[in-house]
Image 1: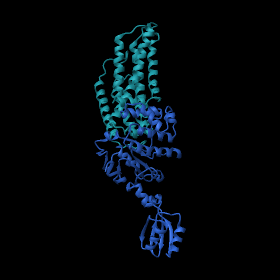
Image 2: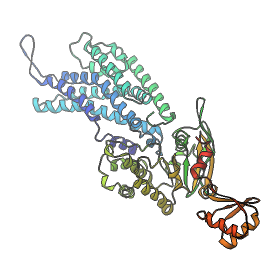
Image 3: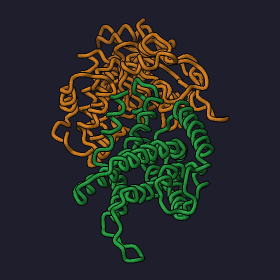
Image 4: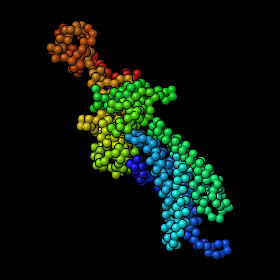
Length: 254
Length: 303
């Protein structure tokens, strides 16, 4: 399994996929770093540095851009095998097709972790460098949020994988990702609680928990049903992918 | 008989269209098996079924004495293949592409990569991205990949596509050498008769999904030999004269008074003169016989 995973990582050498990671990381770092600048309240009193706000801004950006970026990542990883006609060779190796699919999912999970955690690391490093102190309890909150974002974002990856497998092109993923990202942006701007019922917006649940001064603070009552919906989406789409990948006849590029 | 591969009533149907129909194929150890058929005859579909890339609608594939279904992974460890097109990760160079293959085949020794690249003449281009390779270079790299894990059976679908005449000659020689030195069995599919006849010792002819004939190259050559057909008034005496006066022994009497000579085809005047001098009336001398191509066209209905 490790060999298969390693070869999947090798395949990404010299690709533009890492630009997608940067496309998520840079805006998140920028939005987060605005908390480092001096702030003054409407009454003219200087406000203290708020690291929680830093993580919140960062989480917002990642959960808005994430659906589009992660859908494109899995789309590229799956469809390139058909487009570059390597699928014949891939399925001619003495290993189960499911192993290859799981390895591809693991690669995307790694890229999600990279996209989510680089801004987090940036926040910590920049806070140490600029403010010379770190509130460990807030760092722990940020860490929990980022772990949750990674896990919850992964929940919809099999849906995007299924689209690219069936379509053999990245276009359906690009369309799905863009629409979902726009929808996420609108929903998150309104801090709506029930938006997390939409599986692609489930990662907003831990982000919203860090929000301060919003209309309805406190635990999100939709968390449990949102999780059930996400798990259901994950299981159904993953089962479909496994069945499809395992059973489909291979005609390269078709 | 030691068979590497056998198929039993192998069939592939897409809705109402039968692409491969009741195919019974046998490939012996050490064969260079030419799988010949026109475009769309069902060659690639058959090869895909042999590799387990598509599921047969009916029938079975037996590889190395075991049914493919259930023993696929074990069988694939012993096979190298290029199916339809040598697909590579274009962003990587030859070494990286082969490294992926090496790891997935579980091979320990990295040096094998340079060895196969030398074998196919791509060592100098090993650090070039495959994106910049010509089709011919990709074909060579495909052959290198197929050879990397020392397979016992090589399945190559139109392996000389995109190669220049010099390259075709080199690759052909490589196939012959590999069979001799390593005892590798080959299945080489092609729509070009000329390509197959120069390397194959057995030929399977497929047409519209059906395997029309599976034949040894020697038998095929006999079937497609040229001959001088001579019609004379006394066949027995003519045969005697030809043997005694011209030392012709390779001939057949097909009907009374009709002989087929398989030697001295370029000397009809001399044969005519000899027979006439010996008072044998020669009614007709004609050079005939099918070329391999004629035979193939006859078999496939002349399309």
